[in-house]
Image 1 (tube, rainbow, N blue to C red):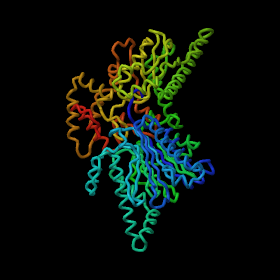
Image 2: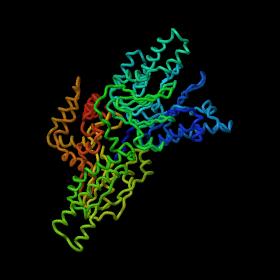
Image 3: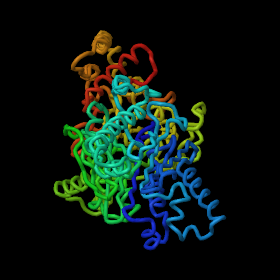
Image 4: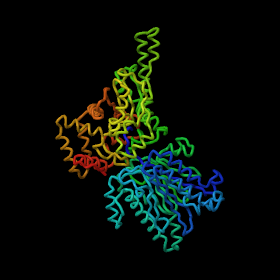
Length: 626
């Protein structure tokens, strides 16, 4: 994705199933869990640039000793900042007690972040500010251990206002309207109800302390979560720690946001991405399981681990953008899916270059498009093999003609290299637009001026701003006859409302193209018609913005996009080739969350958001639609 957008948060959970002494003896350190949490977070650091947070719950602490700890950071390198803080605290303690590392029980008593239950969060902000106050985990504190709740998640609720109103009706006075606080208080409310129910049930025949211990043992986390999520509308994967030692990983009923887990007799671990777990614990892919949609992975204080249904199952619509771009390409399935996305583009690309491989150079931008690029090459090589076979059969070439034919292959060059330091510098100061044109260094001499067509694979095109402001002009310096930008994703036409910061319709180059086409073809009445329908939405809401795209073919929109991203002074011809939704489903058959491309939202809130986004566009409001 050449455009810079904020996107998926990342979650991590570790539950040590043995005492800290066990890990000291087997692995040489009582901080085994903390070290593994660091690995899980670093292996998912692409999912958080605005901040990071860590939470710890210590099991079976004595009254009067703190058993919940939290550390958060919005530093430039927040993960490193947090763990540097941990080890500074450790070193300060070791100055007074040099043998502390050899005494796990001493570490647990004295080091805030030496515990058995750990969570981590990597934040990409989508709706609120980027100060420390908005960094997960969020904590709900109480003197009853079983009423303490720490929560972190990768989610967005489309009906946060409705959930807020429900809390007010319950008698609460929430301190803010953010969906994170709303979700925390919603779960916290039903946690309180469940704890009180158990207390009332057992207080007659037991002392208060005995009743408290019974609550810790019998707390029905599944019941709490089932009641909490009843009115949730959104995509979510969230981690929760309860003060006495229970924990959970909760996933939305459509499986929109990802969550994976692994357990053995030593540890339970969960994360947003399977490769992070595989790498941190040296596991095969089949050992890591997916948290089923609508379920929670529940880890009881006594070490029992099980999956439990918390909401009615719905059609599985796992986010296809995870497969195209957000998740790490080292995942076994995602790697093959991305290759297939490129492979399925081969016929359209061959047509675009008029099957002239001798005068075509293939490359990719950015690095996340590399795997799709390999797939595209495979498709072209297969076509070329059939072409050679046909020529040999029909024309029976000899001598130099045969050698020339057999030596034909796609011309591949490393066209562009990103200057990472410069890109980082620019993103820290959005006013440095002039520098954008120098984000990439190009390989001079890799293209024959005025002769070659240059085909560059991108994984997706959202706004088109980076293409128009820098990439296309940079490529034009090589003086190709024609530039073809190939997107392994279909046209991004609709906003997201489940955790990715893509909610303003006017920012999408595909939307701007459709609006231009409507106005140019004297269909301004269609735009006004859609605006009126969006204003009147009530009851069973449908996505009215679809009507805009239905008026034009995909090729018409793609051609207009090419005109929009066409920079001033471009010498080469320009074409944009997009993936089809049909091929997206072929490449990623188990992940049909395609609302970005199709407008088919899996929850009612999605339709409300897209209609509201259209109203905002028409009224010139540059605000999020949720």
